[in-house]
Image 1 (tube, rainbow, N blue to C red):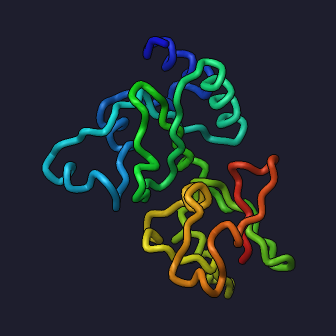
Image 2 (cartoon, rainbow, N blue to C red; image 1 turned 90 degrees about the vertical axis):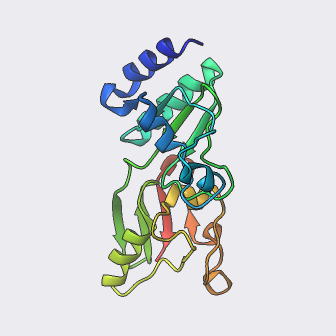
Length: 188
């Protein structure tokens, strides 16, 4: 599929303000901040494959429409939120699409009765932890990437942290259903 058609179709799906094609935005979205290509970038080099564009949907419906379109067109897609991967998990496929969930970053509900929080995939873990601490709660998840990690990436990589022996890995702290993806509910 030609890049121009792909980008135009995605603009129609999620709106022009949610599509980024400039070289700087594409390279920035392909970075993992603590992982594989750090030394190359420190020398001003970037050998990561170039995605056609970065798409930042604002809601679950936008994500669904983008994924449906990319699937039908057989275009590779790489999900991204905080970019703290250490496993090449955010590195795109040449000509593919980076689907960036960082714009979906709201804490939707804190249910103190059930000790559950509902938050979107782009919610920074450090922010969620801070909000919960003010109420006397904790997420109970402290990975090395805490300052930059977002909930979607934690779940996608089955993240563990310093207190995983006490609270468990992220998969033991999350409750989700098909309806709430990419919204995540985590025990508080």
